[in-house]
Amino acid sequence: MSKPLMSKATAVWLVDNTTLTFRQVAEFCGMHELEVQGIADGDVATGVKGFDPVGNNQLDAIEIERGQKDPLYKLKLKFNASAVGEEKRRGPRYTPLSKRQDRPASILWLVKFHPELSDGAIGKLVGTTKPTIAAIRERTHWNINNITAIDPVALGLCKQSELDAAVQIAVRKKAAEGGVMSDDERRKLVSTEQSLGMDTEAKMPSGLGALAQFSRDEQEEKPADFSDADSFFNLPHGDDDEEEDDDIRR
Image (cartoon, rainbow, N blue to C red; front, side, top):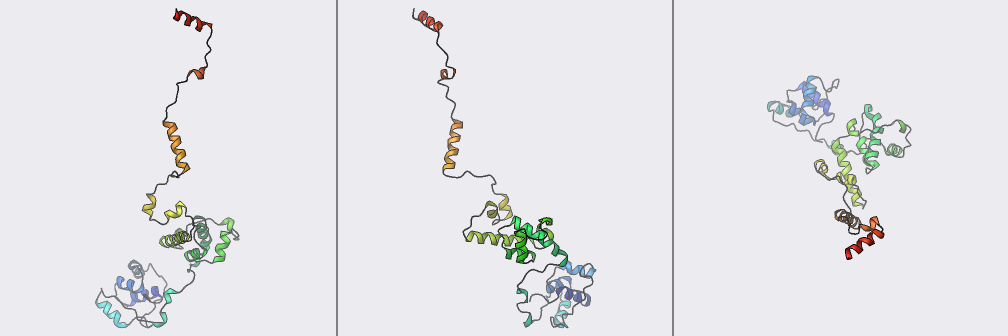
């Protein structure tokens, strides 16, 4: 493992019982330096009981001594054979109790705006089960009429990078299977800056569509023909016209 068990409780113990720097504690526990500083200030991990890494065979006491003497020294976690592969545990994402009620709204948002995502991908993003996703996708959920689609990133159920990665994988998989990608799906394969620079106007298709457009342009540029104007007016020739012709001949 790259970080100890109960890392936050371990950080609390190290802050309270050693003179290690915030950076040393953060690197050892896999946390941010500001989070460790918040623990020292009492703003983070309030009520969390410290977990002794030395007494639980995760850290040697000599490592703490070396770290206290040298602020640049990085603590080394003791090797624990029973913890090998612990981080690779498979299963649905854990969702806090306070956010579990928001999962149907995020599922509806993903189903609506990212139909290319499979039920398995949605389950990994928001930490839910396939029956729940199927019920919302088929609109058979017991509370479907009261569910409002909300972005799971805004709800804090997943990160934007995780959502983007899942969407790109789904789009590439669809393309590899021979599916036709829409313009929106093509944009998901490029970066945001490249997508914003794309031309959003519809392009004229080739073949008959191009010939039809060329014909319309030619007709617009060709001036109107008024050489046979008499045919529009159809003026009659009476006796007065014949008399004028006789005078001219005389």
